[in-house]
Length: 133
Ligand SMILES: [Zn+2]
Ligand SMILES: [Zn+2]
Image 1 (cartoon, helix red, strand yellow):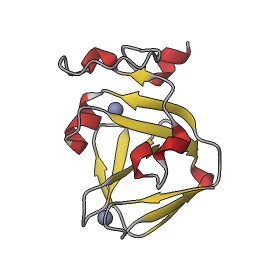
Image 2 (spheres, rainbow, N blue to C red):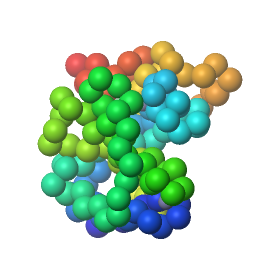
Image 3 (tube, rainbow, N blue to C red):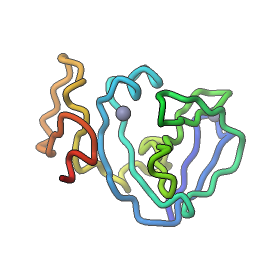
Image 4 (cartoon, protein in one colour):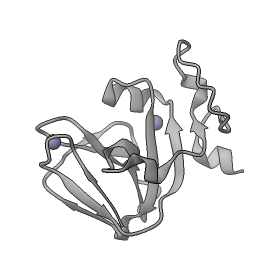
């Protein structure tokens, strides 16, 4: 079981499933909602994600909702209306982020030009679903 939470500790969670879709997202919404150049995420069934605390919810697009700690700002989850059975969890909110190492990059079409990563992982210009076609 994986555990994690926000920086201040007000929000904690447990993950009782194997992380899938482990990826580094370069989209403008991940950037804009974190202030970071990219964000690593993994996906689990929503039933396997158990959160304690009271995150603030923010609609970052017509179909997506992000959950943050209202005290320290750590972004914990992304939920897509089109995929109600799963939830994305920010990899670096894990107590041990090494347990869910990314296996790809997505939305590289939006990547900031000054960041060049030589990790050898596959790169996809847009979404995960596009990557899986
Ligand atoms: Zn916090
Ligand atoms: Zn993104």
